[in-house]
Image (cartoon, rainbow, N blue to C red; front, side, top):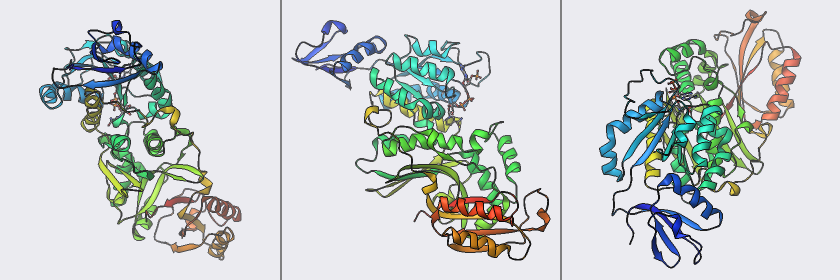
Length: 502
Ligand SMILES: NC(=O)c1ccc[n+]([C@@H]2O[C@H](COP(=O)([O-])OP(=O)(O)OC[C@H]3O[C@@H](n4cnc5c(N)ncnc54)[C@H](OP(=O)(O)O)[C@@H]3O)[C@@H](O)[C@H]2O)c1
């Protein structure tokens, strides 16, 4: 029996040319065990795969495996945490996982920047693509960020050479995930992206490997710590969105340019990846309905709380006969639900399934150490020879994405209007909703709530909140267009979707 880490190659009699491999062991008349140097063996193995020859990673415990040499591009918040994690835990990782993980090379923009880690033991590469292609790198870790540019070029270079890649880059995968998964399949490489969704929470592994036959009917969650921090603070204190955002920036929870987070795009990228894994469809980030949290006011927070709700930025994807609905928007959720109690920078992902009902994973969604822990988990899987298709199944077996139109979304709505203080206004507004087939659950007039608009005439308006019963999005839009035309309201209406998760 052969020992060590390598590949089992099986073929029809005579199809494997044993001369291609270092010290091949003939296991049976048509099955070989090989112990290759990964960098040169991968292209040969992928040729075999193309010819339909069975190639399987195989690792036995009888002989020490060669160290896994890791190249890390990006030494910022996550990359520096990963380097210090690997440097400080080398022997314990080896004891627990049976293989040395060595950082062989690193890349970042500035070589001299103080990152609080010692990078002198590692080969420096100005160019991340050169690092990914280096013969001293068995596994490439991309922690630079960016949906194109060097991140894409370096990941393509690594996968093209048959090297496994681990990345935390949701923007890259949301845009190029299908292409990269296909490339990985072609060369027999692996892509790990646990850290790309909900930072330290192992949701990708759960979806790819942990559900058995259970199929997901809906996935939703809080996937952006910046937004959750802001909404939590606004719900607890009488403080505006802008002031909360400034605090979040001071505390390092929000970027100097927070657009990506607060407008919901970051959540949308993560939802696109989850949705693809849940519903076995191609990644379709451009098809997501996205609304951010910038228009949420203290009035919304107060009314929501009085009605027993909290406001959260949720990413929600579900499958229906019309297709897959993917949406990101502020949402009123009952204060009694588990997701309503996930506060501050914490994240949570909830999977509703047929066999195991509801599964909630909650924890830190960002931060250097939490995110690096997920990166490391992927590295260890690869070190053990574990390889599953990046998107859960071969790319050609993924269904084309079919979008369920947002106008067909059905649910409850919170509608806040600035209504002119004139006789007949309320009756006219409720009549318009009735004409569109909308039934109201409650009508709330709150003279105590400040009207938050600088528009002329604002002093003569009152805040009116309407809570609808389940209705179609198209009906709400139609009714509100008519209400605006009637001239009883001032400024744009605030519309927040309600989810009861019953
Ligand atoms: N931070 C988190 O909590 C978190 C959580 C989940 C996922 N992620 C994802 O993890 C990735 C990294 O995030 P981060 O927060 O660690 O970013 P970061 O702190 O901004 O660090 C980015 C690193 O990439 C390097 N870099 C940028 N462009 C480069 C180029 N052209 N060539 C070589 N190096 C380049 C930078 O070099 P310099 O240092 O020299 O400027 C820096 O070291 C992103 O995809 C992000 O979305 C982050």
